[in-house]
Length: 377
Image (cartoon, rainbow, N blue to C red; front, side):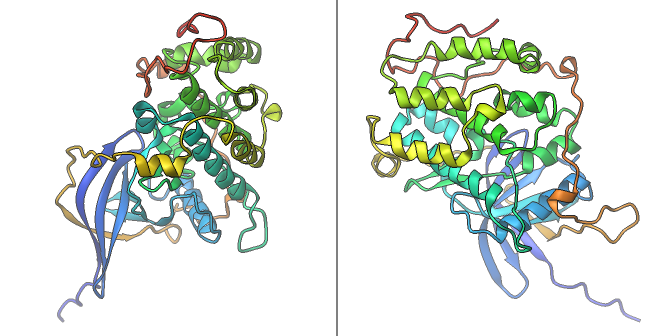
């Protein structure tokens, strides 16, 4: 008896790679489905060590479904999680944008930065407070807010990318949490906190970078930073010293906002909704173009590309299957899956010195202390 023909498969044709990071390789591709339906998509190909059947990926898939039921304009839409040649791939809307890190390097005005952070904070607020299809509060957090996951398009549109992905990767990759530790809230170094206040701390670090021109812990390795994050008193003292070095021309409302967002005690930080409203309120007090006008006036260079093995290849893609096999965890709602809070030994992942994503000198005026803030212990 002749073998039955294989069912038609979806395929991805990879056109270009726009970045290779610890999260994965980011590609622009065409998704072709059976029946002739083609769509341009953004594809994030995850590390080969990420297990498609792991509980963390199951949780991520549940979160993707929950977020898809809620219209959050500033979240990059994830179309689906899939598998291709044994790798987990994240298919998202294609959004012609640059990440915030590169824009800060190019001199993003503070007023435009406040507009970006206001939209992102509103998205975080919705992801936590909105109701899902079952009528229950979503209570979803990002846990990897950093300049690389904040995207700005040519017309000033904002997207927060890779929602929940950092947590999934930290579960499957040894030391995965360490890759973006500089933006992690102190409580995540001790408890793996699954609360929106941790995302606010991350946004506070980005706001500080936009004001000063460097991260408050610029120059520290993971091993050097770890004792600060484990000791609230020491962390408070260091951050207070950095905040004392803010330029003189920073409006008091901006100073108060970044100080609150960087509070070591999560209960002292403003909520995402408060951050969004405050960014909107104080944006008019800051000189410079608002985000949308700045984006229209800017000369946008072509999106950079890097060599990568999949460029030019056409590979099959299939749905990400969860459940149904021996030892395979079923998909459960996010609230029923455990938070991923691995125990870390800082000596296992000392990491290199951080290369700042923005110039050390911001050009925004002299500091309040009259001298640059120290950059290492």
